[in-house]
Length: 86
Image (cartoon, rainbow, N blue to C red; front, top):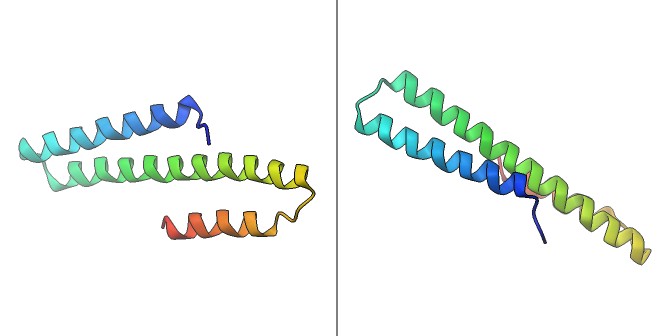
């Protein structure tokens, strides 16, 4: 599957945030600041997962409809991926 450039950009931003967290730890920043940054990173990861699953779901649904096949399993798989990501 081909992913949108936005997904790659999000993940690169998250990578930068994680490097920032490591630097904060090395600099001895407060727990409060570090946890805030980690929470932002986690939110970014959650949004990335949602974007990837929704893009994949859309493509898979189109494929199933074009084939004249049921979409039930595709939807269930997408929901399972989202549940598993939590």
